[in-house]
Amino acid sequence: MMLKKAFVIPSAFTLLLMLFTFASCEKDDTTGPDGARGTMSIEITDAPIDDASVQGVFVTVADVKIDGQSVEGFTSKTIDIKAYQEGNVALLAETDLTAKTYSSISLVLDHTTDASGSAPGCYVLKTDGTKEALMAGAQNTTELTLNGQNIIVEDNQTAEVVIDFDLRKAIKREGQDAYDFVAGSDLAASLRVVTKASAGTITGKVSQWDNYADKVVVYAYKKGTLDANAETQGSGDGQLKFTNAVTSVQAKADGSFELHFLEEGDYELYFAGYEDDDQDGQFELKGSLSIDINLLAGLDLSLIDVEANSSTTVNVTIIGILPL
Image 1: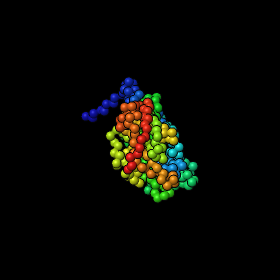
Image 2: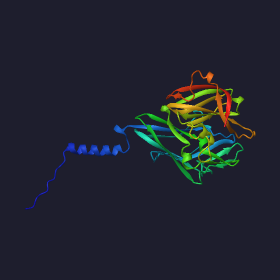
Image 3: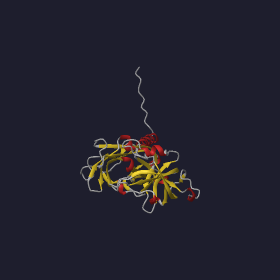
Image 4: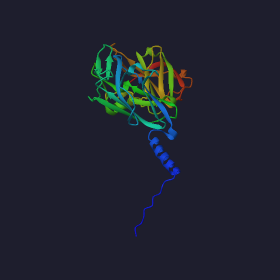
């Protein structure tokens, strides 16, 4: 006896349910819950390089990636990073994204060709007008990935992200007149990412510093991470100093300073005195500037509280220098 196969015709409701499920699966690949989407803007700024011979530092970004995916529509940009300090930023990219949490941003640097097609792509412009190519080991490109950021993009909101390209950590001096990027992991470590919504500022003034130094640089450290002996000896590629500092800034002639884009938390400050003994524009670290603690009005320089979207004021008076 031959058995007949039974064919079940789906009901209209079942067909609709299947179509909805399929559409939902397709939708989930590109959007967040309920189709939520937002925007991420990525800006770039600089913590200054400690070298009076450097007029500009030009970096060509060939690609920007978010969680490994290239930003759609991004075109190569060449930016003078040194031109953006003390809270000033250059817009690098802005893109529409699924509303969710992102964990990494990557920059692909083009060392050989800038955005106009000229060589080199990344270079130091010296005050005498000459260029020094920044090759990072003679590679044509370098991809720098900054992980663990937990950047939240919310529905119909813009997440403002700032990349601090710390040129002081990123560039080493080779001989009297040559420059290059530090290599590998040291170069990646010279960049940090912070969201504006979670960042605050330290501002202040250093008084009477010019009695003891030709310039003063203020370094900000996360609470408990400052080892003054190790930081002043130099480490890593190029034996750079103060490599664990979150950021830094040279005080202006009137002693005023601003430290921007600091994540919310506790910080400690280190005030370093530099001198130009040979009057050649090359400053050498001489030591830690000694603070008049009687004028701090109870302020603890090893415990500076920074809150998001606010500014903390730190005013100090220098009474000496502690040589290295």
